Image (cartoon, rainbow, N blue to C red; front, side):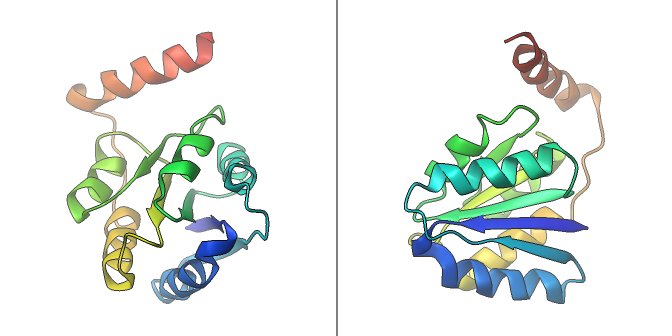
Length: 145
C-alpha cells in the first residue's frame, strides 16, 4: 500500500520511527513533515492526498492525535480515527472504513504505536450489513453538506 504520513513539529521523531517500521512491513511511505505548529495544515494536506486517492491510507501524528484527527475529518472523503488500542485500530478499518488513523506522540509508546499501525494496515474493509449502513449514513451526510 501507499501510505501518507504527516506530523506536527513535536512528533517528527515519532513519525520517522513509525515510517521506518511501516516500510519494513513492505509499504511505500511518503512523509509530510511540518515545522508549522498549526497541525491542521499538515493534517489537511495528508487528508487531501488520501481523499484524492494518491495514497491508500494516511497516518497522522501530533501530541495526542486528537487535533490532527479533527482537522483531517474536515476534508471531504476522509474518515479519520484516533486509535488507542489494537481493537480500535482494527475496528477503524473493519467497521468504519477509516482511511486515516491518528496517534499521539506524547501519549502512545513507540512499541504500542507500531502494534496499532500494524493492526490497522493488516485490515481490509469489506462492506457488510451491520457496519456498512452506518458508514453510508456518515458519507450521505457529508455529500449533502
